Length: 151
Image: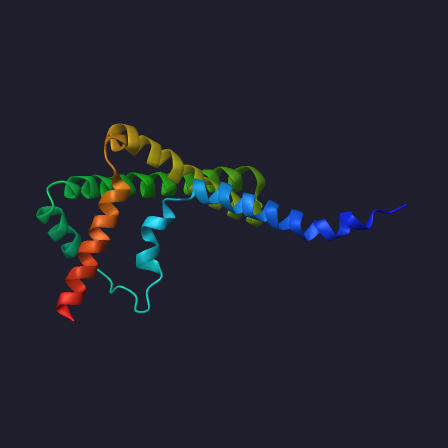
């Protein structure tokens, strides 16, 4: 015999499960809330140049050094990504002569190289001492106010 009450509670169970799922992942990606006011705008922020970033670094004695260090760390990550992608794809091509395998190795090597480069930068530049999220948010706030003054 089938219990008809279980079918009526199924949508409620799914809703409760979905809310728990959203809460779980929302806590892990809560740092995205910092950027939402810059992303969800009616009119997007205009592009900035390296000179604008350097002006912010010079003008903010607290968040400027953190932003500068974060930008240097990105160079480590890009270098690691290039080395990882090219070397992994090259080794794959040497031993397999498979175009799709080399392409996948190129992508995976780029991701792994980016990760290793970021970790090397984190330790060598002591990035863990800075709040880079706050520095990036302050820069976006500074750029938002500067671009609104220029408009």
